Length: 140
Image 1: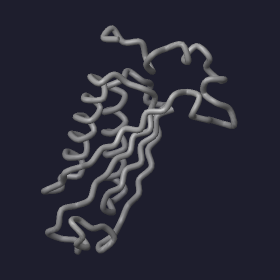
Image 2: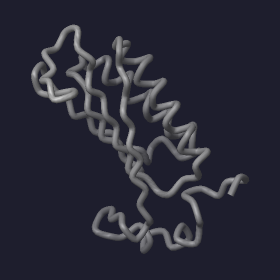
Image 3: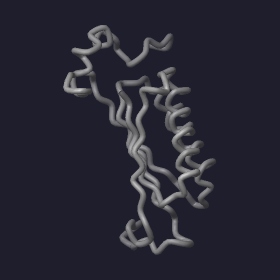
């Protein structure tokens, strides 16, 4: 089950709804995964709660701090490139923030390292353990 944690400036609810849809589409379109399996958590901050180059951000006029951590099963390099491009495009289009340079970290985890509802994914879905990547890809 892929999850994203997105750190960004406080947003109105409508903007978060649009961003949630854009980020879900970015991952699903890049990997072929069902949208229902993708979770997102927004971590919003206010003025003075982030810093760049050792200087506290004072809001208007400063570069917004946007950081995405994606926790997912192993993907090919090509798929990861697509994920990063699409997440970046979704953030830029939805947030419309000038001078926004999102940082995206991808944390890949084998099925033995992820638990859902008290069970390891490798126990819930033993057929997945045999795969080299999350979804069989022609490029493998």
